[in-house]
Image 1 (tube, one colour):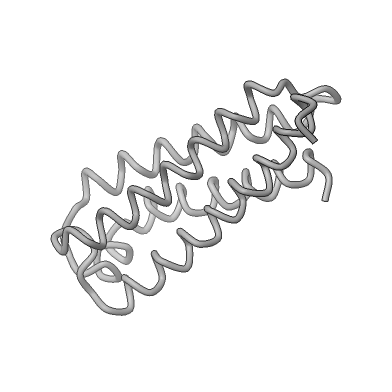
Image 2: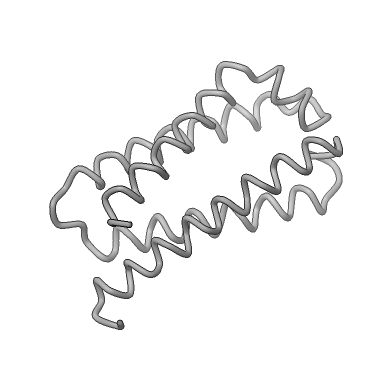
Amino acid sequence: MSLNLLLRINSVSCLLFGLVMLLKTDAVNLLIGTEKTMLMHSIGIILVCNGVLLLVASLRKQIQAHEVMFFVLGDYGWTILTVALISAESVIIDPVGIRVTFVIALFTAMMGALQFKHYKILKGSI
């Protein structure tokens, strides 16, 4: 899979999840089992901004290695944060919400790993 396509897929997921967190906050709160409206709005804004950055980067013919590493770190950070929020048992507490957020975290980790493979190619490590 090309890096440009990978970044676009990641962009779409960030934009969709970000918009859901911003526009359907009550549904997200119901899914995770708590009322964390400000947190959901903050995360939604971050995801939308990241999605726009991913889209802009994906439209370039020559993507810089440091840009890819930025997205890799964001994906791995998201995954770690999700596991921490599940483990804390204070933000994501509903069993269905735990499963859904864990699946999203796995997808995000996979995106990070695929992007990291491209990062190593850009740096000449492969």
